Length: 226
Image 1 (cartoon, rainbow, N blue to C red):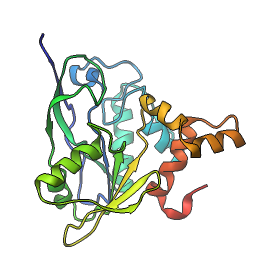
Image 2: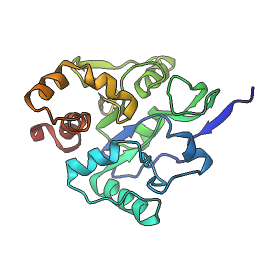
Image 3: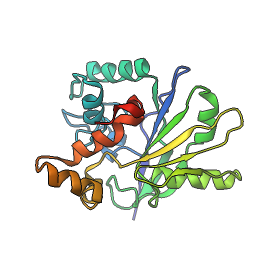
């Protein structure tokens, strides 16, 4: 059976002023084939099913357009540059038997050298993994790269989201494993004690609300938690 060649449609979105880097794996296959729907944005994390841009919109009080238009792309590019946020998904390409967005379904994975890109961006002090250390997640692949280079992450906090640090000599950026901004991660969110406690206090509390609460201090600063 022929495998689907799932190539990342976007190169790293990095620039000299980047202070944070978002790291995921691959967008849904329709972004590779170019079969986007009218509410997809042809840019990183632009899937109409994804939550990252709605989360950032809430955190930064944006007014984003969700449409397959050049203007929607420009909004996101301008925002990222203004805020010093880069994006460098760690997977360059993978093969799939089933054409879907599952990380577990990736085979023959080709990775981008995240250490190299960190060295090209000397101001980066925070790397935000879009997911934890589950198999084929961004942290999982990064740890694999580190082992090959004889390096390892140093744990700072074991609480969710877990935080690590990496000694790169001239600096020690932190690595934060955020709950993935995907619908597939909602079941995991629903099982978290922290989410259950907040849901009990406010029955209208959602998995999107939970992510906004979790992500906010790492995008805005430690004193911004509600």
